[in-house]
Each structure stands twice: as structure tokens, then as C-alpha cells.
Image 1 (cartoon, rainbow, N blue to C red):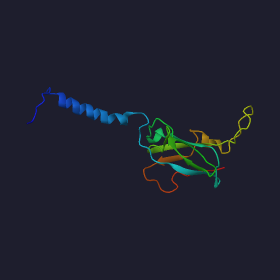
Image 2 (cartoon, rainbow, N blue to C red; image 1 turned 60 degrees about the vertical axis):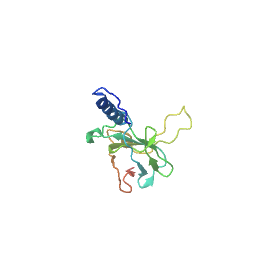
Image 3 (tube, helix red, strand yellow; image 1 turned 90 degrees about the vertical axis):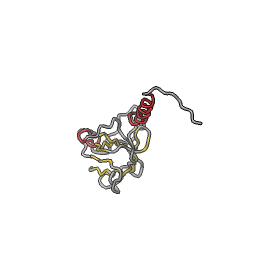
Image 4 (tube, rainbow, N blue to C red; image 1 turned 120 degrees about the vertical axis):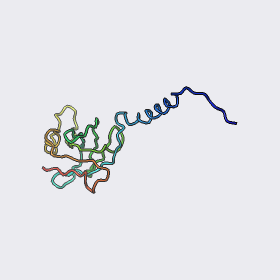
Length: 148
């Protein structure tokens, strides 16, 4: 009624170990960190910044060793949504926030437009903006209030 299949003594153990290693592989891939939605509004002197980009740089001083940089474009309402490697969101952790915004240059042969914001916000060493991405943020937790 029952058939018995003969196996080498260690084969079952080997199968279990291999299955366990395969289960761990997705967590080892670069960029496989769990992403949390991050959206906010960028304002300068209380008014929405209507163009530019936001970059979250992992704050290594606070233990964030993520190897990527979540980024988002600022829309005409001052809103941004972060993406990491083409997927929405950012991994949990502390970040230094970089904001860059310049008027578009209509002619490629003209010099770049001056920054619309204080240059300290576009310098990773000087930015005062530090944000902690958390699983359940308070409303407005990712809003960025820049000074003129």
C-alpha cells in the first residue's frame, strides 16, 4: 500500500537547508528593502515651491546604511512623492534631505539659472533638513519648510 523511497541519510537535511537559503535570498538583493510611502509639501517662506526635486540621502551618522537615494519631483502645488529605484516609497530610517530648484533654462547655450532657494538646502553637508521615515508617520511629517 505505501511505497518507501530510499534516500541517503543527509538528503532530507540538505533539502531543508537549501529551502531555507532560497527563502533568504530575496532579502539579500540590493534594493529589496521594504518601502514605506513618503509624500509631503515643500514650502519656502510659507508658500509652496512649485518646481524642483527632493532627494533623501541616508543619514549614516544615525545608522541608516541603505545604499540608495529615494527621490521625488516637486509638482506645481509644492507636493512630492518619493520613489526608490523606480518603486514608490522609501526604506525606514533617518535621512538628510536635499532640495534643488532652479528656473528652467529655455536656451541650452545660456548659463544655468540661479537657485530658487537657499543653496544650503542643496548641499548634503549643510542641509538642516533631517527626516525620519517611519511606518506610521504623523500628518505632515514629511512636509519640508524652507527659509528664504
